[in-house]
Amino acid sequence: MRIDPFGRLLGHVIRRDGVDINREQLRNGNGVLFVIWPNVGRFEDYRAAEIEAQQAGRGIWNSANPLTELPFEYRLRTDGGTPFRFVGDYFTRRFVAPADYRKVDVNNRIFFNTSGDATAAGYAACPRSTAGDYESSCFASGR
Figure (cartoon, rainbow, N blue to C red):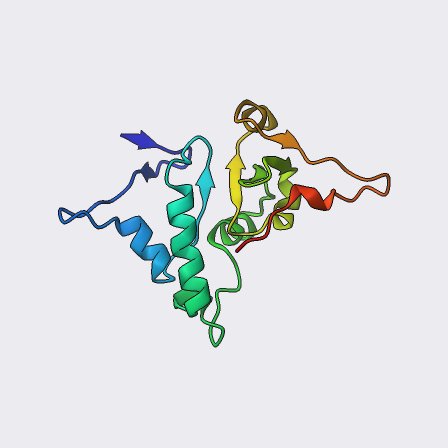
């Protein structure tokens, strides 16, 4: 049994008939993908479920009543916090500073507790131009 730093139980819920409830929540638009390294084993499957919900406009992706704030953004705002995890793009293997998480498409984000964790996972810091902007090659399309 794994517990996160906030005391929450971490796990995957699989019904006896083999249905992955975590995946179904994403597929139905009842959740958003939030993957913290090293728990990346189901990333692509869960990502596909989230994109399916987005394309179908299900749940939080319904354009008539969309989710306006991601759950981790809500927690940061209500706790008076600031982003603290480095964010990698799963496909380019580049990462950005915590405050720049929005640069990485919501469907491609892998969160890391430290830049050292990102490096250990094979990610490299996204280079910046002389103007201070991140290089566009650091970011893959979200679909």
